[in-house]
Image (cartoon, rainbow, N blue to C red; front, top):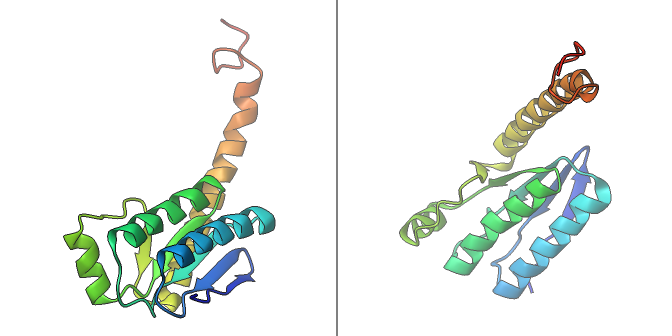
Length: 146
């Protein structure tokens, strides 16, 4: 079984795959990452796949599902360290991993996560600023008209 430690650094969970992932390992990782995001309130997930040299269609789809599930829990996911052979295989399998952010290595991944988290905070502040103005009216105006 592949060992995938998950550590929390600030608002980010870092999961480093240290061996090839079998299907059962990948499913366990998906469950554990989702549970860790929910438990810790992490706003970002860095998934480092530097040690992964082969991927099949199941693992490729699961990577997209991991990013989608953590996004639904309020965290941005960045996958790092995708080997050239893995990237080629994903393309050959027709798996685009839509909505999945990637970076060349963990350092660049952390920098990307910080930018995305900052953008997420700014969008949240903007939404919060706009919400009270609309709360008092049915039509979105606060001028008493219908």
